[in-house]
Image (cartoon, rainbow, N blue to C red; front, side, top):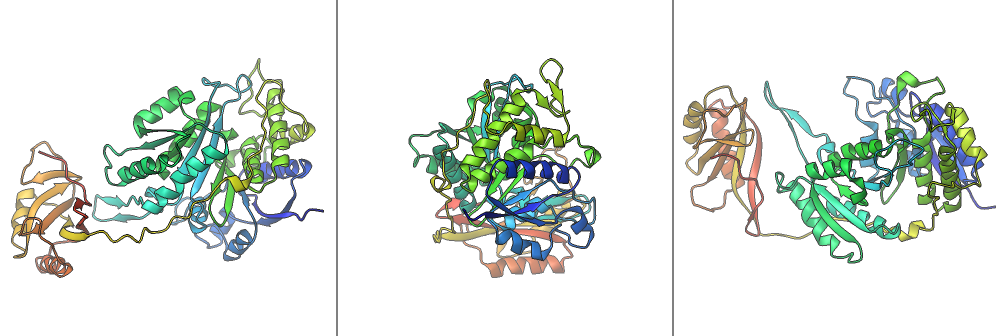
Length: 482
């Protein structure tokens, strides 16, 4: 007898225990060769004093199994609780979030019956690092982190996914017309890697018009790769326009583990009523089986689910008069899938899983180790102050004999030396100092000296950013303004 594959299972909160029970029954009936290790995560763990919603011993269980199948959890309001999803993804290095968004017309309502899009979302960085600061009375600050290794891993994964699953095109979404350095790096690396896959079509869209096209004409897209925040938002949009967010499962893949989940929340108001649709978690479990190499079971369960949908056996969220045949609850839907194991849909396209995990290469990205010719040429000092630009300029210009104040900005707009009276300013100011010699280097000692002078002058500096040039190319943005 083949040795069973150990997986970690968390029933979660709200509707989680109900949809997980239905999913586990289907996995067992479908012949999945799994050994279940249950753990508790979520609301009860949060309220017990673990602000990440997971106990230390649970990490060992996850680490010692081959996959983590997780139902939705509830994060208590307030109290500084961390997102468990983000914690697991980043702590375990699950850098690729994969969300297939497929239409099941005419059995589930959609305006896009031909839709079959896979969103590949970067999972570890961007604004989801959650690095935020309140810097003044009125202003908070968040850091957007986009690294070369992070970009390389997710973009290469998207192309490898397309290759393994016989997809024809990979599209990149960014906002690099505005975020020229951060999103610009993502786009640049996409172009570099695309050249390594000449048989796969590639294209780039600015995320706003790309999102509009995705919502209006999803048939244009195949595999779409993007940074974390855009991917989170647009995968929900894509799932909804395909038919329902409640139908979408997701995979979180890394070099050292994998987590599978529905993309919807815990819906506590529906808990305990036997009405929730378990489809998102069922399809997440299918993704898990494929990842584990259990392709026969994955194919069997997925086709049975498609047959159930095709037969009009629907939960309340997708039930529609004239199309649906039978309204069922969570347990009954799960049983309907079990009853159809071994069958295939007749009108919907059946699935065939022949791509083994070996075909999906996971790229190990490391810091480049490259040593550019890096030169510090200035510093931006952010200041908390409620006073006029003219008053600030007088104070700041005379602080240093070695560095000169070249401009003052507010929310990315230059307000000195050029200004427009209509510009609205807040209490956070960005003050740029450069070397007296044009293009000259600035030392850390000079920067520290400038900050010391600010301390003596009673100026409340709240953040600094060194201005560096790498191989002659500025590594900092140019303020907007006149």
